[in-house]
Image: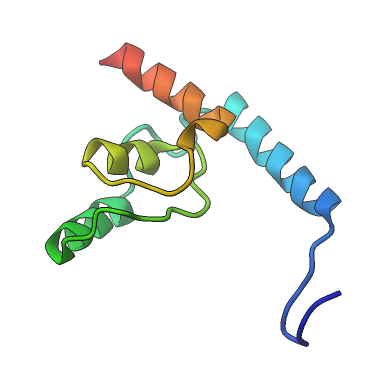
Length: 98
């Protein structure tokens, strides 16, 4: 049950279905958003570096293109990035390309 009127509680089945949907989407269309980091990620990295921030939390990392960009620039995250299947596939494909 939600703790407040504005809080929404999602059943685990809904969350799992969304996770599976996006996993399948990224597996079947790995270059859906391209392989290069997004413009917002590039700008965020500049801002984080300007502020001296090195530890970030990226939510909704999708196929992992921004996550790999942040990691390549020396940013760290409290979450293990290898947990996500689309990310590891994106990483393997990008590694093979150079």
